[in-house]
Length: 232
Image (cartoon, rainbow, N blue to C red; front, top):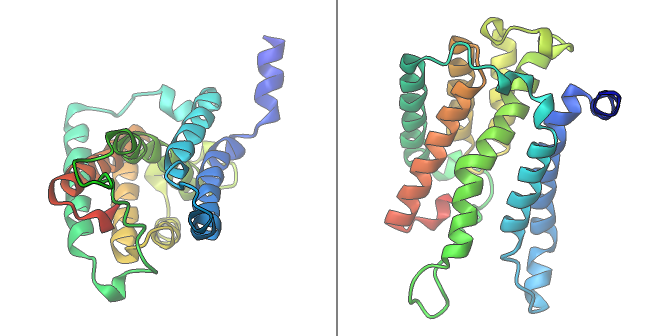
C-alpha cells in the first residue's frame, strides 16, 4: 500500500491526463519536422503511427488508476448511450461535409495504406490506424480536453469541478483549442462543442468517449470504403 501511494503521489491528476496527450502531439511534431528528411534518406516513416499508438496506449494503461472518472459508470444509461452514439454519427457527418478549403488548416496527412503494387491494403498499418483512431485517441483526448481542460478552466482543482456545471467560457475555449489541433478546424470546433455538451448532459466521461469513438470508427470505415485518404 505504501509503494502504491508513493507511486500515485509522483504523478499529479493533471499530469496523468496531460502526458499522454503531450506525447501524442510530440510524435506528430516529430513526424512533421523529420518525416521528409527521413524519406529522403530512404527510411520508412510508416512506423510513426504504430509507435505513437503503442506508446500512448501504454501511458494510458500506466496511469489508469489515476483516471477516477473512468472507474465510475453512474449516469451511463441506455438512453444516454444512444444519444452519445447519435452525437458521434452527427459529428462524422459534419466532418466529411465541412472540408472547405477555408475551413482547413494546412494540408491533411492523407495516409494512403494501398500497397505499392496496388494489390490491396497494408492491413497491419490499417489495423494500427483504426486502433488509434477508434480506441486510443478517444480515450486520450477526452481525458485531456474534457476531463482535464474543460473543468480546469473553471476550477484548478478540476477533479472537484462538476462537468454538468461547466461554464460557457470553458466550453468555448476548450472547443477553440480542440479545433486548432485538427486540420479541419471548423469541423473540429463543432465536434469540441458537441463532445462537451454530451459530457455536461450526462456528467460521465464515458459518454463523450463513446461519441468520439463512434465518430472516429465510422470515419475510419467510411475512409476505407470510399478511399478518401485525405480524411485520415
